[in-house]
Amino acid sequence: MSESSIERARRAILRASHRATGLAEFRAAVDAVLRPAVGWDVAAWSTTDPATLLFTSCVLIGMPEDHALEQQLFDLEFRTDDVNHMRDLARARTPAASLHAATGGDLAASARWRELLSGLGVTDELRAAFRDREDCWGTVVAYRFGGAPFTPSDVELLAALAPTIADGLRRCMLRDAVAAPPPAVPASEAPGVLIADAQGAVVETTAQAAYWLAQITDPGTVPSSVRSVAAAARAAAAGHGDLPAQARLPRRDGGWLLLHGSTTTPLTGDAAPDRVAIVVEPARQAHLADVMVRAYALTPREREITGLVLRGLSTAQIAELLHITPYTVQDHLKSILAKADVSSRRDLVAELFGRHYAPETRAGALPSPYGWYAPGTGTPQPR
Image (cartoon, rainbow, N blue to C red; front, top):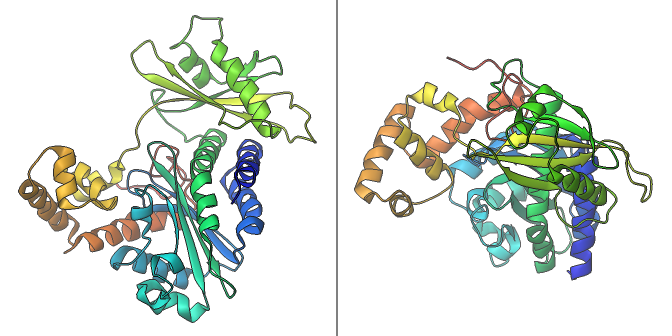
């Protein structure tokens, strides 16, 4: 894959992330860009909770949805040893891989191919995890039914575009969260939005955005970063920008704010849009959902270890990361498994997904730009 081909695809995806009205439209646009370039028949585009790497939504393009097949895939993903697990790709230096390459051409070496994909006529599978500098926000699983296997260039393309797609997924989650705000979110957590005109001047703002701006600048003034983010958003939407339109600003209380710019009107050719919407949000790390603490009464340390287990870290890796002994990790794991009423790490992952994530997804809950789901968009949570 040539550098120019990768850059053309990157610009098209970046442009789509600014034009799309939400997650579904963005994922369809990315599929439209990459399907001709890579050549797959079916692709499943998922969002993930960055704290657990469990799936929070999925769009299947190329064939009708089949919930029975989906459940089989989830079981194989969570309960079996296999190549190219998403939790492994999310940590790998190259976050994309094909099944043909991973098995040395012997697809039967893969449990999911033997038990499911072979019966569907799949001749190769291409997977990628979409992560930014810190977190994984989504994945794709693409299939070919016949023809040659995916090439190293196909893998290279997806790996090179992973950060841009990750940024687009989270950008659209933010847009969805602002468009459908939950009924009661503390001011210390909710994102806000402001509208900048063609000159970068703020012409509209929500109360929440004004709340955040007051923490980084004096009343009545607008930081220059707003104008630069607006300019970058217009350039990206017109296909002339190479970087996401965002900025990170220090707050007066010692924290940070993130600004994300997106155009508000479709473009025709290279014409610049009149306005740019800028989402303003507090910078914070994704965290394991509180619902799990309530459901299983996990201690803070157990919750921390659970998150690392879900990401696929070994006992030794967890011990090194947390500066505790492997024996201490094992003691915590025994307590976690007992509280969740499961007997293995694999069953723990499957239990958390099946009991807490799958029902929310089926109920239509929106993926959150902070991990878990946007408050108030799915089923009521137990208290």
